[in-house]
Length: 278
Image (tube, rainbow, N blue to C red; front, top):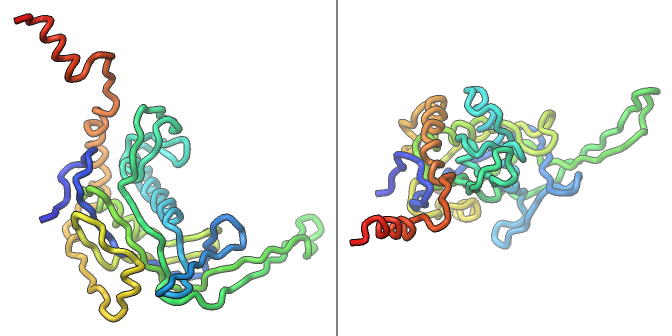
């Protein structure tokens, strides 16, 4: 029977916790890729035209929330996204990073243990709302200085997607589950748009990934029954950060061990043979 790991492992153990997640917009949201006015939609052969949220947007927001909570507990408060990653804290263990480009300049990289997919709207992408903003000149208080059209995904749109934690401990799951609930804004200009409610509706611990938003939306005739039993009795999130942080020095020690040329198993055997010629 598949079970949580007791401590984090550098080597893959083939354990996957899959969380089926719903994000309901409480407000219109601006979800775009490269172009300022582009609302992301995708046409699926069997689902039709749907609004979508790329995983990178959800992952980026989730990582910031994990870091925010971590700093509040005074655990590696210097760690930040982009080139200031410390690569030695719970957030970096969960979401990964590149040693050469981080401020830590360590000799190892960390692969993300939190994986996801494109979130797909549960209903067809209907009419897209647009707003035209008329800028007001600061000096003369005149309008007509600039116009900008904003296209939004309408409020009450519900998205569904899967978030997977690879080789999870209970502490890792506690951190991810708690911060998913804290995901209350999504999209661009989220200081004024994109309020949302995020809910975990199903959880499954397995030796493989076999859940996806696409298949869940296709199975409308026999929807999956909610089951959150595996998330019961998780440790408190504050204690989970502390426990995970205390396990990291030992976990990463093997990655930073320096070996001189000729050492390793064969090198060691040669030294022993030289000292004991018999």
